[in-house]
Amino acid sequence: MGVKLKDLVVVKTIDMESLRDRTIGIDAYNWLYQFLSVIRDRFTGEPLRNSKGQITSHLSGLFYRTAKLLECGIKPIYVFDGRPPDFKLKTLEERRKIRQEAEEKWKEAVEKGEEAMKYAQAAVRLTTGMKDEAKKLLDVMGVSWVQAPSEGEAQISAMVKSGQLWAGASSDYDSLLFGMPRLVRNLNIVGRKKLPGKQAYVDVNPELIELENTLSTLGINQDQLILLGILVGTDFAPGVKGIGPKTALKIVKEDKSLEKIKASVKWESEVSIEDVFEFFKNPPTEKIEVAEKKSDLVELKRMLIEDYGFGEDRIKSTLEKLAEVKKSASSGLNKFLK
Image (tube, rainbow, N blue to C red; front, top):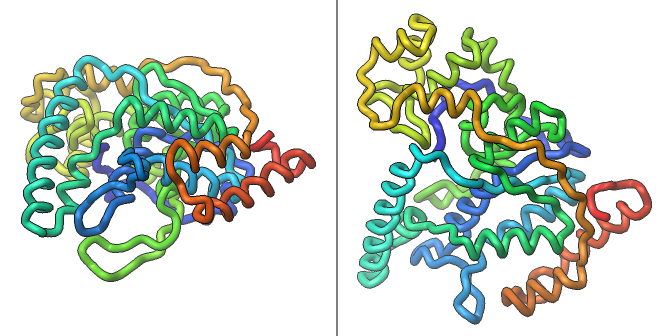
């Protein structure tokens, strides 16, 4: 879900060209969930499937979007979530119940011939098998991925701080609470996007959020930003009822310490505010050497067609573009695919 900081962060609209030759860490779970949510029948909500009935929405999104990044000269490194903190388990259980309820409503809507897309999107599941398929696809594409010990966004933030990555890419703002210096949004949906419930489209461009710029503009430090996010609500605790981003900003400016803030609000979550603060402040991360990988476009074509049922005509132009990227790499013009 992510913390709601949209109305407070300082956003700079950029273009894809400005990210050329940049190494970007991608929140893999965030993107895969988005692909599974969006790549569906607009009325029934059915995900993309092959002739065997296997869901391929996540693979379709991952293949085409990753190919686009490589074509634009961007080096993506996907980071997958590891074990969540114990205090997040209740949130995950609540989400599971919400998905179950959404699935029932989805089935009812389909049976009645009613539009079911909104229920289908709320019922999205990312299975272990889907994660493994995604990693296998990235391997064959020659794109690196790493396994985080805990939250992927925390690992990406640590890698940006260390200089391994230039920025992280996610739709959520949680990365900022983990101290990510640069966050890029919309990389997974750049292009024309249909407005929900309308026959209208808008152009979507990448957005760059620089942490120091946001902190300076808001007049707060990193600890205050974490506390602000906690008051609004995060994936780990629901926050304080009735407190939105602007009110939270006012509170953290007046009561600058965790102790004072805790005393001034009604914290009702079973998860302690101290535990959430400490997790954002010092999350589990590891120093990970990112292994360079070689693409195998012959195997990629075979995998997409034979294993996952993609039409050859459908993937032809994208494979040709990947071949051009690989050719440039071998001539020393591009180091992303070897």
